[in-house]
Length: 368
Image (cartoon, rainbow, N blue to C red):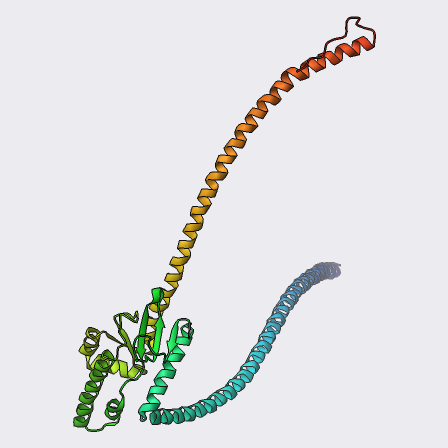
């Protein structure tokens, strides 16, 4: 019994132990399943949260990408427009360049033609200067062109190749000045030795031709002085003009013979070039216009004097008319103040008498 009891006790203990172990194992497994379910739930929540964040981040990234795409497209569109404008500008530059190159080519061709014509003209001018008679005609033509360009009219402000009235001298040009005054000009100038000087190669030849040219100019000045261009009987000024139809020659005289101009002035001869002739003619024309202005001013002064006398007469008559109007006003005020009141009183009495309101002798009308 004891052994059986012990066996039963051992079996019961083992059963109890197994039951306890099973309970513990079952409890642990149940807790593990519960934890696993909770873990799954937590993991699912984390996944959902991650998916939400991922979706939010994806939407944000998509929005940013869309904005960047729009910005890039706008930039690319603007760049494309600028490239088109640059392309159009380059195309215009190319067209303009082609036109300018064509114009330049035509200009160069025209310049070459003009140069050839200028060479021919220079050759003709050289041949002209070599002929003394042709030089005189050329100087006369140049002076005539300058006079016309200055606004002077032949027969009005100047005469051409007209003999003087008191002598047989015939100036090339005679300028008509105010008060019957005149100014003569000669256009013939010696250029033979100057041309030789220009074309001379050796220094001794240049020195000789320079000296000869100075002698020719002095002789020409002295010749003009004795031609009778300055004549009190003719009404001329005390000076005569000697026209040099070349600025280079005039500048050469000023540079090489500075005392020659003063020497000519001392002999009443004024050397002038095409440019300085403009200044001289400007003074002549100004004197002419000043003369007419003086005449017009005198006429205006006469008219002002006449107007003053007419105004004085008008003022006197106007004052007399004012006095008459004042007297007439006094008469009018007297008639209005006395006669109208008396007449008004008589009319009122007549009106009352007509209505039977007043019985009396008829009122006597005033005589004045």
